[in-house]
Amino acid sequence: MPELAEVEFFRKQWEPGLGKRVQEALIHEGKRVFRGVDPEALTAALKGAKLVDSQTRGKQLLFRFSGGAWIGIHLGMSGSLRREAHDFTPGKHDHLALVQADGVLLYHDPRMFGRVRFDRGKQPPEWWSQLPPVVTSPEFTQARLAEALSRRKLGPIKAALLDQSLFPGVGNWMADEILWRSRLDPRTPAAALTSAERTELWKQARLVCRTSLRTIGVDWGDPPPGWLFHVRWKKGGSCPRDGESLQRAEVAGRTTAWCERCQPAN
DNA sequence: CGAGATGTTCGGCT
DNA sequence: AAGCCGAACATCTC
Image (cartoon, rainbow, N blue to C red; front, side, top):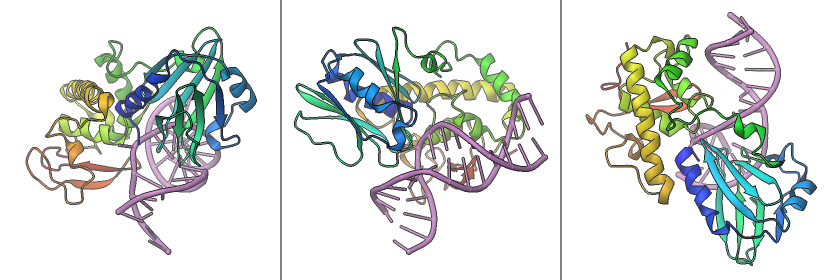
């Protein structure tokens, strides 16, 4: 479910818990989402600690607690964060619950492709500091994009957009949106883009990320009218630009929607 | 009931 | 060696 804007929206759902102590951390021990973490260490470190900060970077979430404890969360395919009243009893898929005096912060994930990390230390954990620059940052330069695309050969441009080391936070629907706006066929080999096409892709990637964060990321609001987003899942959806019926096929292992008229193969 | 779902990772092939 | 692909992961919904 979540791409960068949805991830940011979910981060906000835990904001009411900032500055407040965690009375108790409840976890579904042994579940796949906790792979690699020591459950006792996590619950012991969070008990009595204050949630002091939260951040997102692409699809990654990081929560800082007093006493030098850090919780990282990746929401995978079906993860979400929400807050419930203090007396709420966590359900089957609420794998992590942080009980505070006036509410409970919950991580919910039925498919469990997501992941919870636990780290200790004064500084943010190593894995966090090493994350690549996000698409909306000044470090996401056209030169960086050009270099990365040139290294690929026959791999389709859609696969490049889904590569989290290049476009952190971009997922299946955002990739399709960016390609549609850039008028690029998703199957085009990444290394075959002209310099003008690369520039357009760079611009549209930044625009789609920025705009999604300002709509979905704030209140789960819809992206602007006219976006492919509104029609891409519909059976028999048509291109918002020219009304042509959308193509639908598997590209880079994922269902992909595009318009053959304004995203021509060449 | 079968298919597919807004994601990542691993193993094997070229 | 690096790039590429398919399979696997676990559950729910249409």
